[in-house]
View (tube, rainbow, N blue to C red):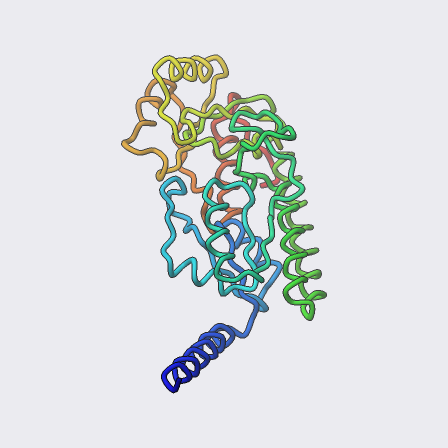
Length: 299
């Protein structure tokens, strides 16, 4: 009896200590996001009132991503988890995180975005679960993501609602201006094509009337006939630039394609914490390698 009582007391003290640690670790709301581009947006809304943690580092390979238990535990201690929305690894990850904190607020930051089916530009239809997950490559989508983030922050921290609203409005105006700038600069290139290894720029291409030709496939090896078809497509569309993600080009498979097509190689990092700067790199590369070598004003 005494032993059981002692164990109960020790268990209660341990629970109290753990709960105390959970709340003493931070004085600001803690929000965990899936990728760095989300962090870029969220920090501009939350400012110094929040702490943002990220699951996937900007230089990581999402296809081999396997978070440590300590990372999952830290996420469970957050006030909110703002998922990207359609990344393949998110569902199983969320189950593990929520299991450690059933009251955790989960926000789908891609809610309301016009999704693209697969990786080849087809619009999403009801009942089809496979969609292109790279929604953050679009400035228009980023505005929707930011609005979803605002709602999440106002839910977990009502006292900061006005502060978040003010920051959100400033961010939204900035994103609107950025989108208009990109649209103006890329207008002469409408209908032109570019190559990518990993099909991560579908939404960007849709926004500005461009054609993305993906030379690689999601989690699959491309057959020789399929590759030849892609090479023929690249030649017929006179694609001038090939965007490469170092994490995705295992074994330097892109180099023979560059040699065959004559396209200019441009390294990009779509998961970079410098979200806007990465989009600027893409826009500049397209302008500098366009068919007419168009250089637009207003950069």
